Length: 284
Image (cartoon, rainbow, N blue to C red; front, side, top):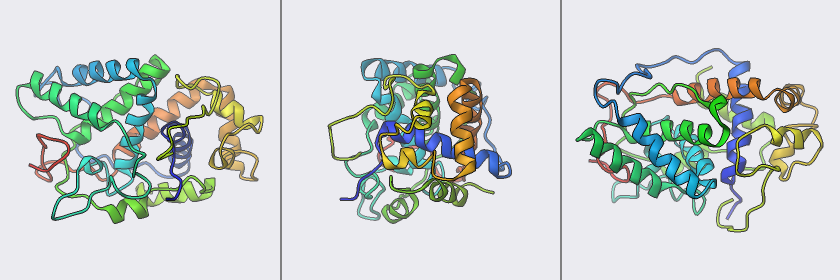
């Protein structure tokens, strides 16, 4: 099996690449999403998501990176539609068994708990699984990184009725990609360590979300090939971002938030498209 991005690596590596994509390309079109979508429908929805995420991350800090990675892998394959959560059926083979995801993605049980709790407090199924992923990703980063990483998440997505193993295999970047290759993957999707339980921290603060990772790259201490590809490889764009973020945490937080919102706007299903699943693992 080919190697895959670890949860922690995805959290920082995709973050800087997404920030670069934000800075180097025009703004994306926002499609009918708003941070206030659930205010009248179910005002307890977002606080409930944060409560369950907080419980999960406090029990296991690595879960924050896992939930963030789920959102990344959902959006990179046919848009942010919750398709990554679907189990295989007789009609389609889902994304969970694609090489970049197999024995690597985790946090599905936490998503199940979030969905169950949200449906309970809302007294019906009104919050999509796609929105659960987007909000849980934000809450994970906020819990691990503090108030600096708190940002508004536009919501109102609906869930897909299908998934594609082939799309996941072809649409997710492997860990040996260079920065330019990662950036090309992101630009293509944006409008203009699986199977191994031996974990190694990527920087000195593995239980937090901060900018120490970038400082390690400046000192040529990147743990993995795809880490150090971001700095010292003759790419002025990525070198400049790594230097900037290593010395300016506030700038990284601002760019990260804007990049996450932009990524969350990738081809969402809205209006009458898709559905609101009652079980995130299967279509209604």
